[in-house]
Length: 437
Image (cartoon, rainbow, N blue to C red; front, top):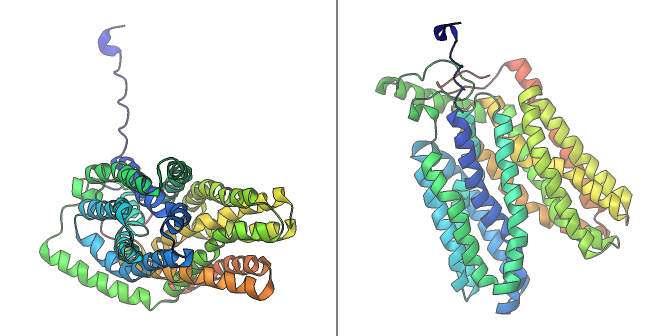
């Protein structure tokens, strides 16, 4: 056989740039959420003990973070799609990491409260909106899996960052630990954010993953103005719709129910379990959440938003049932917490995918920013509500029941919104970069 008859091996397909963007989103999220955002709790006791402050006074710092972030989220939703995203994210990350590390020099509660306001503004640009925004622009297919991977990665980083930070506090003190962790978060997140994250694949002459054909030409000025007018009309129509308000409330209920995570150690103590088991309950929720984030994303891609929501809410409701039925049985408590992780995972997976399902990607950041306001408000109300239930009843069973009820109501709201969509048609108005899969 002649050499010319031997066909050359087929070229291996290149990895779509969307997957490298997802890697960058994971690392950005890991630095912002996994290292900076989710490590706040390990400092409360050592800082208040060294400075002689009541723990409640230092906790006001965290309240300020949440309130300022909630107030700033609509601004972030308007700004992020209109700027060079990678530079805004890098700036917000740099300020957040510098503030986090700079707290090593703080000597008064006022310093912490000012830092809380600064971090709240930064978190509005980092925590809820950018990853779903970028993923929805870059992935026409498998966007649920991509969001699940990013969320799971942040939880995985937090699972390592907290014990490492706790060990550093024991060995070198909380001040040096803040510096080390702040620098580590910056190195993890900022360089790759600048190098790889872009708002849309069309900026690089590419199509989203799962879209067909070549990238469309840039729109003319007249076309851009027409599209902007259509988008404003689409936003107005969306916010007047029943699915939008169902989405807002179900997102808030996810935040309310997920906040029960923080009460797991107190419940363990109340039923006679030791502190180690109570802490293990939190870890069980986190492990269940990491696995569920991946599963829920894939379920969304395969069977749609309703199936993913029902699985998440079923696990979120089943977990409290098992916890309450287990009483002082440690094994049952841990199994219930693990199952509850499936509902906990829904907090960062279901709401962004719900907004995309009902309203598409054209106005995604504006609409989702208003949904995230509900996340912040319900998160702030949940600890107070759960503590009040315990004070009145002397048990956390009422609080677990409230979380369970929230998951049931989420499933009902999703059914109502989808029923409205079937009767009145879809509100989804995708950007010109591709059709809805």
